[in-house]
Image (tube, rainbow over all chains, first blue to last red; front, side, top):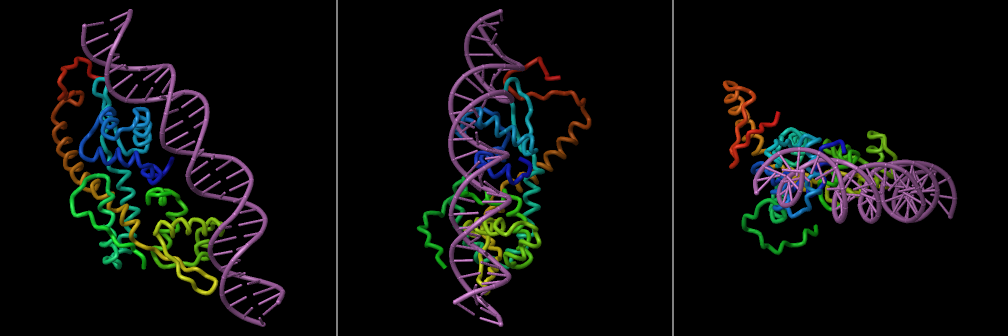
Length: 121
Length: 121
DNA sequence: AGAGCATATACGTGTCAAGGTATATACAAG
DNA sequence: CTTGTATATACCTTGACACGTATATGCTCT
């Protein structure tokens, strides 16, 4: 488990990170909101902490976890050359973003419900 | 192998993608430049193609592979909320550092309901 | 048609990580 | 000190996937 990419490959870990982006959370709060067993939460948090994605502070028996920006910035940096690349493909890009906007687990806006046409080229 | 994050978790696949960002390449060219066995290249390319990261065109016996922007754009989209967090984090950190620079470093600020006389040493 | 090159796939193997269950540690309150 | 709560860790099992080797497919050229 070396690279930041392997860390965020795990869906539960991404869910935890997305949860922490709003504010810090205790293990129990994460457990409740994501509905995953407590050992699972703790183990993923350990991986995230060792990899530098989160840090924890002690509050009585609770541990409050919060985000650290650096590792995700590393992902962002890796993505940079590709952003330059897809500037040439803006049209296809926007259609795709519109399509995936309904599968983003973070928040639901509105405006999806389109029975989207099979992207059969 | 569902999510785009699992796809790019593999270092060889990331290398292939980084190679293709400049221009399209044949399998043999990828094989040479990345010094990996040909079946490995083909198998990773297959994964990338099925996941929509690349597409191939036939040129005689060669297959020319080139990038498709959408899946990486999806990663980029997932990263967006965290970018907002980074800016906010830098500001908050600076204000915090500014604040504690004029108070004792061992100070425990507890905003919890219980005034706890055991400040973690 | 046959030889040779370029690419894809099949198969067997080893490794590693995620999940579940149980238990350990730490703190709090009575 | 004992009970209850919050979190961490240990152990085991299972499944996925990456790799290597071997082979298949497909195209070109003579």
